[in-house]
Image (cartoon, rainbow, N blue to C red; front, side, top):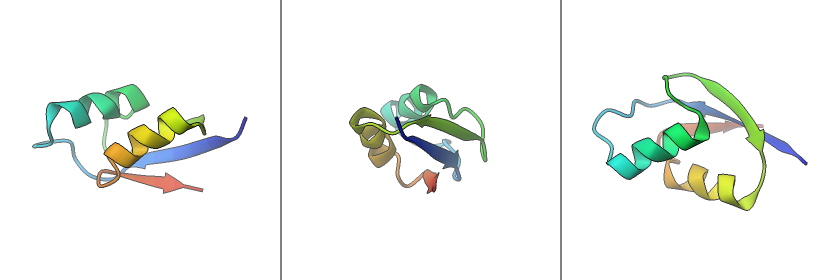
Amino acid sequence: MATIKIKQTKSRIGVPGDQSRTLDALGLRKLNKVVELEDNPSIRGMIYKVRHLVTVIE
């Protein structure tokens, strides 16, 4: 299956707890970290929830 690269570009300080847990579920624990995950609807939904904190690298 296709993969997608996600980079955390903004800090999690001050964000609601559910968004912080979403970043943890995506594997993003530090600023500027890049993870590569499979591209499926559940991952896309998590990205949409924290879209103001992350950048998708094509």
